[in-house]
Length: 402
Image (cartoon, rainbow, N blue to C red; front, side):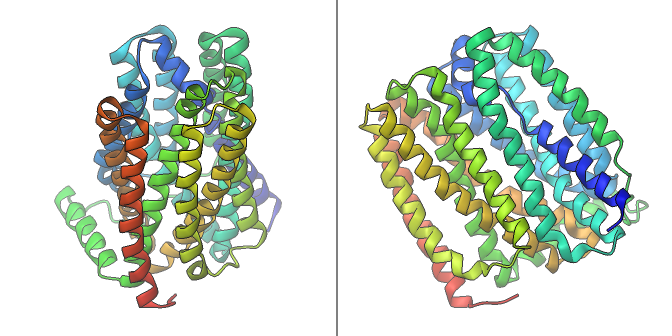
């Protein structure tokens, strides 16, 4: 591996580290409440965020195959920069809602380009066999960016308030955009003479092909289910801590635990170069998530700050295990399609997880408003046990395949 390759990988990881440093993330509930919104609005708007992501999955997958993935990332980063400017100078229900919608557009564009760009870059260096290793490290930097933002963002908010947090975010984003601009442009090999209709049909055929393969279909569903539940858990931390009267200065700890452990998970996969048996993780993960729901119920009735923080840490360990599975799953997916289908493949995979997350979060607004948090988590637990059990049985029935 030559020096130039090392430099570009470093630039790429640093750019994504900075992009992931969302400083408002650990105090988002408080920022919502500043703008006159409630806990129910937080869950509902996050559901809208994921619905936007679902709507954008097809155009994002199409775009990431049509133009260079570097350009797709730049578009994503510029949109995110604009959101921060909008939230800095605008306030209220619809400003926050528009920001979440645009953030959904930005996030799905980035997600569809990040792993594909890395894989294509590794191909140019004849090192695509190292995808699991480098994708693991990439996830390490993404998670570390958010983990560092959890502590720094909370401190900035408590000390100076949200305007300083947003101004700092804007400065960070300019650096991140400059780093992406310095990365080499890797042109896609697709024939751009195809009509949009032909490309839509190609996307449809790719989707059909994916779901005809049992060796990956149920993995996509399982990864999507676990990811959706992880999102629900992570989004619940701030309301749960507020309910338990945890001091605001400690809110960042939950996000730090979550993303710090996720960073560790990425580093573990990278260090072991993907040498895991993904099939042996299926049942343990199912059991761990059942246990995690039990911890959520304990937090709901606990008012002791130390106990609440400890239980949240334990849940974050479960989420970290899920990320290891997801990294291995996505790395494995690339083996089943050609380079030209890669954007569509990731779009299909993301569509499943975001659809499940959107359904859970949009429904949560009505459950939280009418029945309260306990009933909502009981309902979510029952759905997970039934659907997760069915998917696990299908994967075990198919046995171990490539």
